[in-house]
Image (cartoon, rainbow over all chains, first blue to last red; front, side):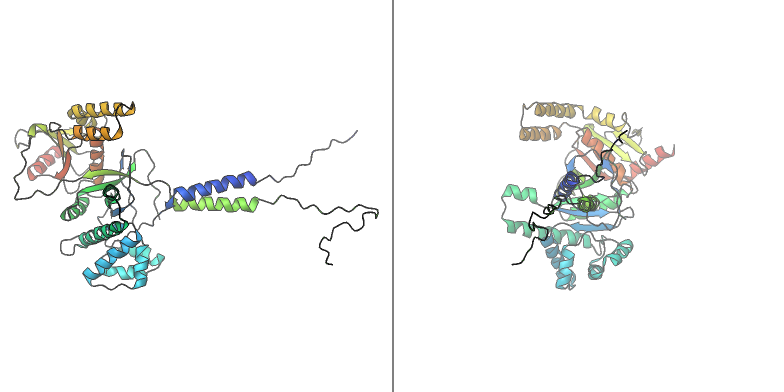
Length: 221
Length: 208
C-alpha cells in the first residue's frame, strides 16, 4: 500500500499584506492625531452633550479640585513673546535657552519668579515640582494670572497681525479662552478665574467637558 | 577577468547540470511586521485622536455703576438655586419675596429640570426645532438658520434663567445645569452669586 503523502506546506505565512495594513494604520494615526501634551495636574472635567470642538488657538486655564490655577497657551512664537512681556514686567531675566525651552513647554502653575527653576529642571524634577506647585497666583495683591492673560493676548494679537489675514479670518483665528476644571472643584474657584478675565474685558469662554456617555479620559500618571 | 558568478555554468557538459542558484525572492517579513506594530502601538498611546469637546458660554459684563440698570421683567424670571451638593437644586419663579416665595425642589432627572426648562422655554424651543427641521430638509441654508435661531433665542419675551450658586457649589452641578439649558435651547441665562436672603431660605429648606 502506498503511503499517503501529506502535502508539505511551509509554516511561514506571507506577511506582506499584514505589513501593508500595519503601516497604513501607522500612517493614519500619524496624520490624524497630535501628541498628547503632558499635563501637570489630572483634571476630570464634567460631561455635557455639547459637540463643539476646542478651537486651535487657545489660552487654557486649568483649575484642579483644590483650586490651583494652571496656565497654558498654544503657539511657539506667542509663548516666547508672552514670556518676554512677563520678564519685563516682573524684572526677571531669562536666558535664550530658557526662552526656547519655555516656548515648547506645556501647562505650568507657579509664580513667575519660580519659573526659571522650573524651566531648567528635567522631566523627573518637573513632575515633583508640579506636585508641589501652588498654582498661578490669583489674589489681588499678586494677580499674576491677569498679567499672563494680558501678555498672552497681546502676544497673540501681534502674532496674528503679522500674518496679514482678512477681518473675517482674523475673527475666526483670534485667541479663545478655555477653562478646564474638575467636576468636584468648588464653583467659586472657577468664578474667581472668570472674574479675573472679566477685569480684562473678556467674557466669552469655552468650558471643556467630556462627551456624555464617553468614557472619561485615561488619567495620565 | 574576475569571475563573479561562482555558481555559473562551468562547461555544461560535465555529467551533472549545474544551475545558477536561484535565491528566493521572498523576504521574511516578520521583523517588519513587528516594527510596524510597535510604531502603531506607540502612536496610539502617545497621541490624542480627538480634540476635547467644549461648551461655549458668555458671562455678563460687570454693570457700570454710572449706567442705569435695565428694567427687568420679573414675570419672565426663573431662578434656580444650587446648594453644596448636586441634589440640592431648588427653583422659584419671578421675584424673590421673603415671606411668599416657596422653593420647589427639583432634580436632574428627566422629569425634573429638563421638563421645567422645556415647559418654560416652549415657545423658543418650538421655533428652534422647526428651524432645525427646515435646515434638515434644505429649505433654508446654514447662515439663515443661524441668524433666525439666534433671533428666536434672544426674543425679548423669552424667559430668562438665573442660576445662583453658593460658595461650595460644585463646578459639575453648574455645568450640568448649563447643559440642560442648551438642551432646552434656552440662551438667556446667567450664573451669579446667591443673595443672603436666598441663602437663608435655601438652608431652611435643606434642613427640613
